Length: 299
Image 1: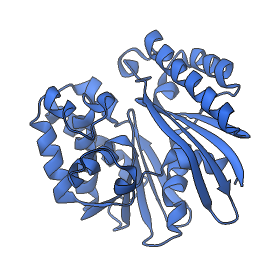
Image 2 (image 1 turned 120 degrees about the horizontal axis):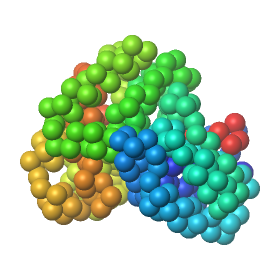
Image 3 (image 1 turned 45 degrees about the vertical axis):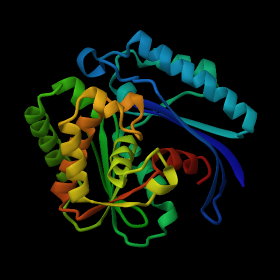
Image 4 (image 1 turned 90 degrees about the horizontal axis):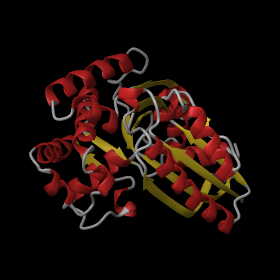
């Protein structure tokens, strides 16, 4: 076993996984997994820069994570940054701050590499059962699509995510849907979206919609992981969210406070993906790019 730490810093959240990995068996023993909403991508779509307050929220989370990593004794650490920092003019400020706190440079990876890490994290434990898979990682700033069985056959990242769509369109859901459709057309140029592959969805929007569809009284990772959610249930949850007020969404027991204002956009992206792929159901995975980052340190 090798004890590793993985950090995934996206547009909306930053997450940490510390785990013991056995490459020979494919076993991952989780020691700590946590998430903090930092909204690093605040205003990036409009200004092209990371806001000072967003950087400070992110650095504060990094300080907390540094303590956990040290206490658990991880011997390897990889920090991956995705959409927001990839788009920002001042990403050097972000890089310098992370290096000072954690001792490693954040790797601002391409959308294609992001997609491959997500695929590894989501499918490694499935060992090819029910493949091929069409994996999508619905983030704050972008969504990655990956098609494959035991390896990636096609991948594409497009700029539709719950934060970006909310900031760009507000409550103009007609224009938001048109933007989502355009992005799915772009994805389909590289990744066939109608192959009949098992559809596997990752990240906070997907797991939150799944939790609502399952009627959970509180967020329960074990109940959500590998659950199968019919498209009719995703459509019903999306309609419920569209018709709800901010206060009503905040009162949903499984709703993280940092998702209340962006979950409607996320649900619209999710539903559009299911309708475009003609998937009867969605397999939800709690294992995602974070697990893929961890595995990348030993494979």
